[in-house]
Image (cartoon, rainbow, N blue to C red; front, side):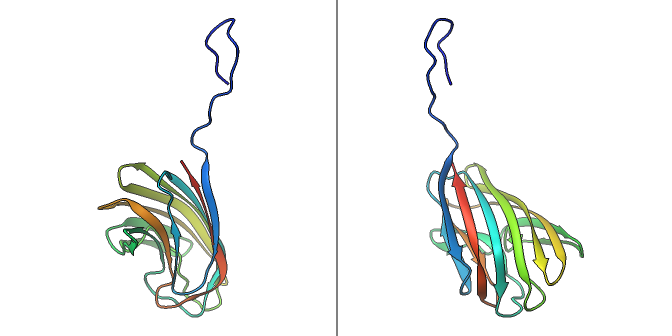
Length: 168
C-alpha cells in the first residue's frame, strides 16, 4: 500500500521482485539445461529424487551456460559434508554420487547480485550414502548467463527431476 500523505487515498503499489517463472524438468540424459529468463536475478533450485545409471565420477555439477555453452571452469566453490571438505572449479555445486543406486535431494539459492556475477548456496542429501553436503559457489562470467546446467558427468540421469523457480 502507498499513500501521498494525510488525507490522501491509499492505493496499491505494483509489486516488484516476484516470481518470473517456474519449470520442472525430468532428470534424463547426460545433462539437463534450464533456460534463465532475461529478467531473472535469483533462482531457487530443487533437486527431486535424482539418481544416475552408474557412478558419474567428476563433473557432476550445477553449472551456468553463456551463449548456450556450459561453463566448465573458473568457479570458486567449496563444500562441507559429513565426510569432509573440498573445493572445486568446475561448477557451482557438486551433485554427484559415489555409490550406484544413490538418490539425491537438495535445494539451492542462486543469485545474480550485479553484472555477470552469480553466487550459490545450498545443500543436498544423498540417500544410500547417508551424506549431507552444504555448498557455496561463485563465478563472474564473460557474458550473460542464459542457462542452468545440471551435468551427470560420465553417467546419465535415470530418475527424478529438477525444479527451478526464477525471481526478478
